[in-house]
Image (cartoon, rainbow over all chains, first blue to last red; front, side):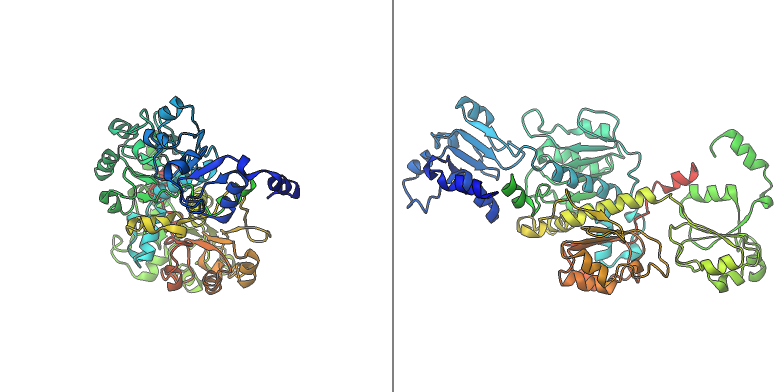
Length: 269
Length: 269
């Protein structure tokens, strides 16, 4: 609650007048849950006395997801009062946009709330791959400082060209686009070939934006220089070939948006 | 060689007119060695027929070091013709500046040649510590993606205040100063206390700029939040307590200036 006036306004509001929200993702953090309760009547199956499931679902005007649960035709059929689907993720690839449009269901994503965090993580992975930070970190932790040799020798950042898909003649390709039919495997064998043996792929979008098998082959054969990857085609499974690469890939577990400050941000939004 | 004219000039020069250079560090890379031979007569003990050592050392007008070999009074006594000491490192803590000044021996360091690389690595470690990049990377490589939980939850970069020694009220303290009597343990218990429980130390200077034992204690007791360290007080020995910290410290083996592009830079300088 931001102020006494806001608190009074919330108290005065008839709870039933708030839109009914069905959560299909886990909500961590008390501030986030409290912020939702201020704005929505959050549906709770057990607190409602475990009513017949169709009746329970029929109340939902808003669905909030973002995790692995898909919002597809079957899901939409079960939610006849649905007006809006909110994704807490930036990506909408788990939502059938065509089916939502056909039924007049609005769709919203996280907007730009994660943009700075994603960019920070991408920049970190970019420097890391070039300068072999996690690679040389492993040497220290394994007690192999003295043996580091050329494996810790990175490449300068200065003078490198960072690009996005569609621009030619670059050294580092940052993938940060949505996943849809047009962008699935948009980084394919041809793009990797064009990137070349000194090229680096940074993927903070979706795993399937990149043809992972082709990228693994290109890395193994030295046709590209390295990769910083937060997303993978079949999460949480990471190709074992990538795990075996010790000094030119940085692999993080889809954490590019995760910070413990998010709760605070939601509360004050 | 940059051009035919430069090549001709070099060929015409009388080799003995070039200053005699004694290397007391290993020189890696053919371009660097070639650049030295263009500008100096590089003394070679074995190629000179293993002369008496005092006579061999007496020829040296320039000494190039930067590794662990100290240039102290005893070393200077053995080099009566010495005019200049060149450190390939940014740091001069292995050179006795007072003794050099007393004997009229000039001292030079690497200048700003590493500045951008050091800054890049410092920025990477800074984001890494806050966003737990190497920490979450370890989860992926250990096959523990699903168990990551809060250990991969980093802190936002936005809004954090980065500072240097002497400025108060900061979140991240970057240590990038020379090591001398005034700066030994300049980051002591009081500074760590002032930095506080959300504070992060990034050290790309020298290990002894920080009271390492106090920093380890502050990290263990949660009195500071994390550290990104490329340098340590007793390299290559890293305190085992730091190695045991799994998600708030990033430890690299004094590689902050190492890139494989350096040779190219020296050649074209």
